[in-house]
Image (cartoon, rainbow over all chains, first blue to last red; front, side):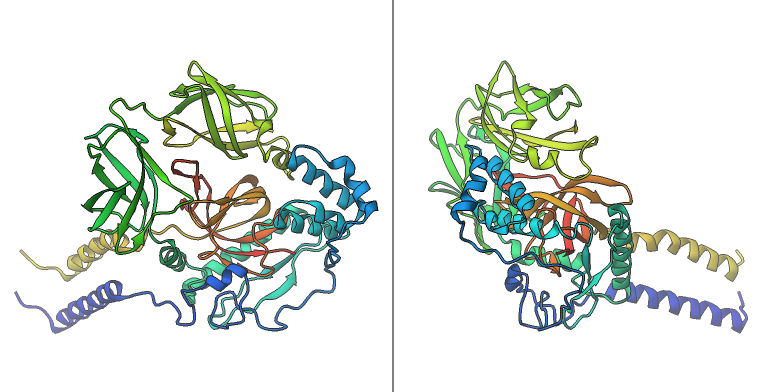
Length: 389
Length: 125
């Protein structure tokens, strides 16, 4: 076959272009900016004087807008008159007491009353609420910058008084989209998924979270779940007994055969080149028994979509005589159970009052999850359903 | 068989139309925008994170309610540096589907469901 020179030339050019594209695709790497430091432990305080930290804020960089009123300073000492004002709030329920004190502080516009609230964050929230009474709709946001060398915060009032909340947030979504798309052209690990995963992986470390079953028989194969497992060389400790040479394909699970140990409850932990997952305040337990009872599980709820004031009946298995629950609205212990069911009033949960009075909740469906746990173990997955507020 | 450059180019183009999308880095979910008012929070006692429940929560123009997880060493905070404070508005980017919050329930840790993990967040005052 004979080809014209021009045809051969075109084919050669095409092949070179294709090879160049392949070379670029397979050899490109993402290089994090050198000024983004992995060790951001100082950023737990949300601010750093080191320009290389991602939370650096230069002196005088934040300009206080004229139309923002700071909440008044909090004098920590309650006067006898203040104590009288909040005396009607005192009750056995700490949440109710704090909620009542906050409402009184806002009504009286007195931040001193906030010092009677338990918890630093709740006290701050109370003080901020008193300050916001005078400026209910002035919301100040900060535009994040894509400056790679230092974080400089500029404070801009982006919502004028009276702007509906929905408009504020939909405008915000457009700004976020722009920020994220800008990083495609100007990669900054503070705004990229890769950067987030890198920071997450660097600080997560070795952890053991749970075993797939709590009560197990010797010889059964179960899975340990956590983070920081190595491909090879993991050692599982059950009390003083150890199982070495365990492998993990994905770094977060590893399977093993339960050894023939004496019946009893053992603390488990993993050791490998990343250290040890043993934590005295968070012991991960395993019960070895010849007749294991499966962990509790919820199969259904009644009503299917309960009102927030309803008593919800949960049906399932292995509840024994009582269960403890961990839910969207907090935890509750020792809930009586019998015949494969237990009843729970959502309004009895710790955070229910906060949810009920939250803006935009009335009249909506709220997604709710629940775990149950008792002497038989912890339910493997959360049971989820909607609650009508 | 006659070799046709035109057919060769077309065949090569079709080949790469199939191959190249599979070579894209599509395994990491994108960063999406969010904003809203946190109502309450609790600490993730097994992982270093804070679980925040928002109402309203804006992922689109339609408000909803739901939880987001703030991870102190991975989420980048911006002014006014008040994340997770109830009723102080927040806005930022999140990655959906990341399980970053684990809570201790006496014998094990359980994953607490959330819409996603915050990648960066700025707050009001």
